[in-house]
Length: 257
Image (cartoon, rainbow, N blue to C red; front, side, top):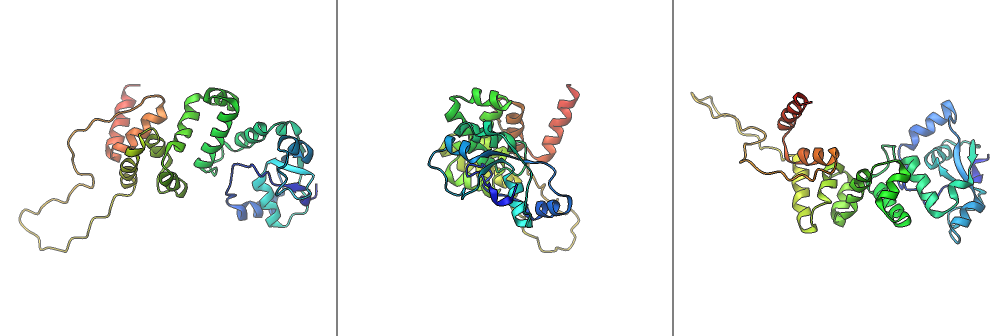
């Protein structure tokens, strides 16, 4: 199909199309290995009446393969192979669901984009359990990703920039709003501890003072874990324990299996 006959799906959850140069080079050298999954313009418009912005006059809308289409356009390809399947666009929910299923296992899908798409599916299907069933996932898998939407707007921005990692962010999303900022600061500092000032060189003494341990000893503390899944337990331990302590816990757990 001529490439100008294909329009990007305006509801594609992957807002940032990443690493296009590498994919464009691959398409140029190796060609297209997998057809794009598309729906006809008519089927798309039946699901989204009045939403023709961005489609131009293209007779087909890409449901799965928007990144490959963008890379092909960048590489200057004139045609692409397509697979027409109007059932993918039989409803607004199906279009969103198809995009999510196609991208859910791809590492370059932004966590916040995935969480927002899951929330839209929950609104369509009525419950997290129904969404989990349709995606072939567990309710806990869906719930963990939706916790990102419970974060304050400032912390959501930090997740998107990568300053706040996804694993502790999901744990923090279960906390009250007033407790999230301090917990996030603790999580960020645990990943990027502040640098120690370089001490001036001192002449050796008979009993030199030992250098401080990078993780100073602290008084015993209680770690509260909501054990709804192994991922949640791992997130809590990672946020509160030093690497040495995590290694020790792992070794102890292995001896009990």
